[in-house]
Image (cartoon, rainbow, N blue to C red; front, side, top):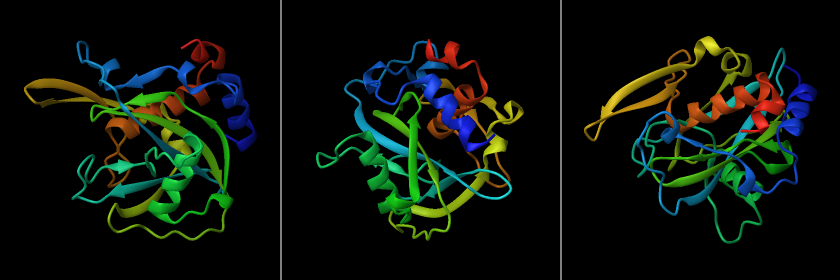
Length: 211
């Protein structure tokens, strides 16, 4: 899939000036009947970085360090909590990306957003889609990021790689998406947002927008 096609799909899905509050809210609650929505979720943003490589686009991801208070050791998009100094959700995603992996905002072309994702840990996450233009240098923040890696976008656009699994947590069976890639275990909120990316890019844009 080309950059032009992705930009077209995102425009068809949600206009750039549409308020964030109008976007559908996804999350683990959709897969788990009876799971309550988080009360007063804290706003956060992540960048969904599509790197313009030859012969095709890749998705840049991080492996979080094992001693973080939330989502420790998990594969994640670069991003984090909104701060009062951030002008908007895009500013949060760009600031957090630069802090976590050292990727400068001038190498990123923001082209759209995915749906809001509610996490079980109480965050309301805005995924911001941006194209990353090589060359660039990365520098992982050792307090938060154990590793930085890339996965071909084509891998996530193949529905055979979208697995729905379950596990018992806190005495209840929980269902969640998993997208294993080589030795990486991509699951939970990150896999859920990648599933949303797949739906937007590969589904019927008008039907998806009706949400």
